Length: 402
Image (cartoon, rainbow, N blue to C red; front, side, top):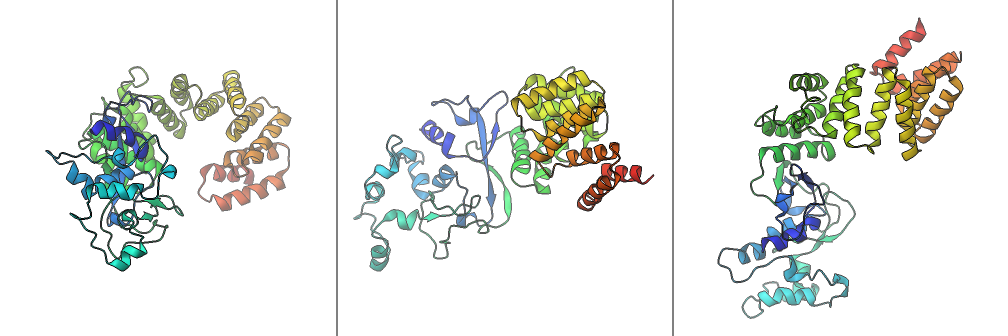
């Protein structure tokens, strides 16, 4: 029975998904427990009866008295998604009374008469759904109206509008909807993902840390590195990578872990070590163009122009509109002292993204090489006003002023 619901939940329960180690989104098959492949988390809020997430139909249904009562141990009837929904027939093709009849097949008029006044029943056209599953908005997507699958007697103060973004109270935490006993690794990842993708609040990182410290760093280095990365702590990442020799014995390291370590070495200007980790990330995910771009940048920093050009060309072949790759191509030509091609490449980068700061800085350097000092100073002044704390811009300004 629960496996039937898992089939529906695979698509109709969406949220902050944490895959089990070694699993992918393609591994679930009907007949399997969804929790054997993934844990699905949703945020819970104070006063959350008044608001819900767009793809949380299964979660809302499971809160309903209809569902809870019928699924008690010993119950002769089992209420689930396909009690009302035939997955092979579109809702639009059903008769007007189809769902009403479904309700009344359990709630017989004689045994369970409607308690609403006659005027209310007439206003709602004697439609059970109108009263007990009204259309409402979602807290995560404004200006939509969907059926709330939390079946209940509505309170008189229930909101009727479709903008629910401000209808719930404070965040209480994440709840795993398809697994009543998620492990520490799953919970740690859930809070890290929630911080990274949805809500950049410090308390989400603190919650992740609560579960991370219950895991051994030498067994789960990737989760520690992910936490330090989101915490903007490259020194801790470098220290852990060196201590555990992750490059030689990766444990549970993956492409993302290698990339994050590479970026951390990049942040402390250890470009040769950054290249080693970027290379590992690219070996695992060749077509992740962000990783390839980072690797080409590291190769440029270490003076390996031949390999850098090869990586940049690969990225531009796959995505000719990669503004970061065009900027790296400009830096390549700049090191080759080919000012004309460097200028062409940086213009392509800025054409694709006029606000891309690395390309703007690169253009200032090119203007200085061409003795167009006034134009370079004008651009630099605008950038410094926009990014007053940027160290690279400050260094460039000091260099020009000498």
